[in-house]
Image (cartoon, rainbow, N blue to C red; front, top):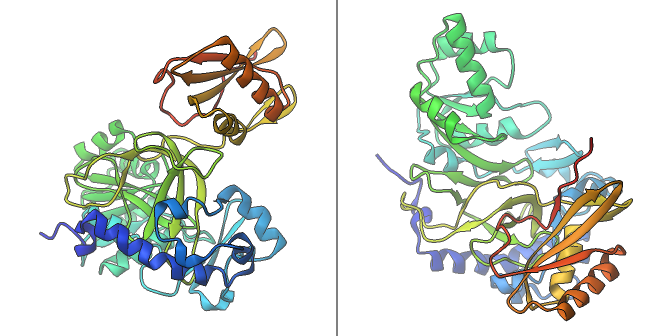
Amino acid sequence: MTHHLDALETRDPAEREASLFARLPEILKRAAAAPAYAERLRGIDPDTVTSREALARLPILRKAELPGLQRTALPFGGFVHDAPGSFGRLFTSPGPIFEPEGAQADPWRSARGLFAAGFRRGDVVLNTFSYHLTPGGFIMDSGARALGCAVIPAGPGNAEQQFELIEAYRPVSYCGTPDFLKILLDGAEAGGRDMSSIKRALVSGAAFPKSLQEEFSAKGIEAHQAYATADLGFIAYETSAREGLVVNEDIIVEIVRPGTGDPVPEGDVGEIVVTTLDPHRPFLRLALGDLTAAMPGLSGCGRTNMRIRGWLGRADQATKVKGMFVRPEQVAEVARRHPELGRLRLVVTREGETDIMTLMAETAAPSAELAAAVGATLQNIAKLKGQVNLTGPGSLPNDGKAIADERKYD
């Protein structure tokens, strides 16, 4: 059995990196044909953006900003040069965020993740992601059909009709959330319906704990997970090695300190930022608001791309203190002004009826003078007074949290 979709997945990592960044300048030029990107790239020579260091100097585009930006310039906020009619399908997802689908085969780059999960030509696939207005169903559908699978466009819900489809078409593969697969399995067991044809699954869109993976496996279904979004499609996917998620081909993934565009050291938790190399609909440094961390080394499955630990929480940790918002980028600015500090975490607690801010800061050289200076910087940036607690290097958790709201209300 072939274990990889093509030779791109097993390239030397340096060869892949060189290929991605050799293509990037033309993508920047293509993006700059759209007015919003032209403004963001003003003064930047695309031909000089040929490394991760150069890419990190480009501005971040936050997914959370897209609804507002698109409202000012419908439908795509000025980030797409081509007319809506040049695309294959047009969607909306919560926000709302308007998303086009390319007209090419496998526009969401999902075939690799499905192949890694065991999907093969001739499989019948039960796809329970929604086909209504949002791209979820089509993300899986297009990749499965690119592999030569036949797809049942079932969508979510209506378990009884799903059982009829399963018993009639005998699908071998499932796409959908892990939660809905469990609903189907439990319903089939309770109602005496036959789901034994399903042997593998690609799940996404919800947490997939090891306990649920083991439950599916005990029922004869090997399920793998993927990290995908409605705007980007497949970003990373699980393989037979079960060692994190392998980043997809033709995209560049960075992990940055929340609230900034600054890459974190390998292994540190940070926010996922993605650049795509699709000239029809490029994304440049789209910050998704999700946390993850890069894993060292290569996957045991033979794929050589970067691996991530999967979804580790949300980067948007803005918290209201004494009626004012404090944001991760403000904590990051404290770190920038005090390079002698390591990890920072702003802890918000409550004493009586008063909010208390305490900035926990790692440093190898603690002193009262440093604590006072950091406290003054915090007050200058956040416009709120806070305590400063200097701790030793490595003492704070590596979980990407810049702000921890620990207030409890009776």
